[in-house]
Length: 333
Ligand code: SAM
Image (tube, rainbow, N blue to C red; front, side, top):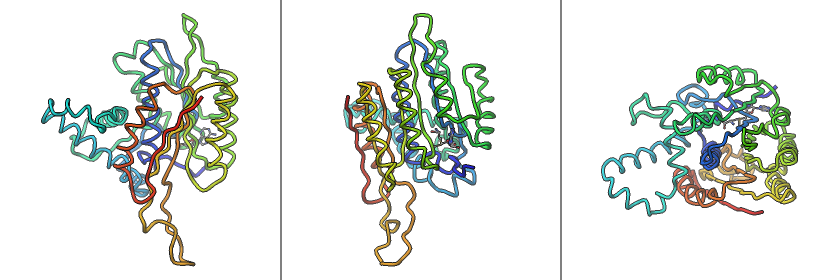
């Protein structure tokens, strides 16, 4: 059985890259008022406590979203103190990182019952972030659908309980099922009254099982065959494993073969010098944990590359832990 629990990783640098990209893509799709089918093949528990054992033990949110909270607060207080100055600053690079500010404002919204200075205690996972956008006042009447898959018995139970609290009725469904298999039955998505079909698919496995890499590629290939105009977002870890290294290349080939545009973004936070492999021969290397990850998007919004090129330098600066921090955004097709 799986041992991966996202509660240890919620709000880390990888979630920041993934969720900034996801939200920006979704915002763009929601500019059109036809309904969307949103599919999260690996949903996790939906929402996480940052002050509980798992998050505190790993310390990942501490080095992730906690640092971003400081950034968010600084920006909000700048705006409050000097609105004119803030308007002028919008021309400056940092202010162009709208994708990042939007993401942080949403996370702040989940923590709005505490004082703004108090450390954020709640982190919304992808299901809750997508649901938040679906139910914003300007969007709620459109009735988008959210389909969630989670296989881990504990997390699927937690997800079902969290989703029940949303009182979303049939708009949100939770299945304790293999997300790769479940996806097949949902594409193409149903047509609305005008015959339009639109879907966003987030594929975000834990890659605990090595075959996940091949299954991601197969799911994307099958998805493109069933529904070529769907928007597919794949998160993957950048680690020293051949399958992880090959995955973005395979996805690029699949997108090119299907004649679809793609975007590939990466964010590396580096590792403190003390955590890099031991300089002393024979010494046990310290484990820095995951230091980099990527997002591959097929059929991305045309605005996404520019948005990420503004947001990722700010994210990198805030989250860097040591040498080898960096970011990339590449497009094609
Ligand atoms: N998408 C979530 C978010 O951004 O908040 C995080 C998901 S976490 C990285 C991956 C999840 O996939 C884990 O909760 C794991 O239990 C679940 N999982 C692993 N294999 C699965 C499968 N074949 N089908 C569905 N869920 C799976």
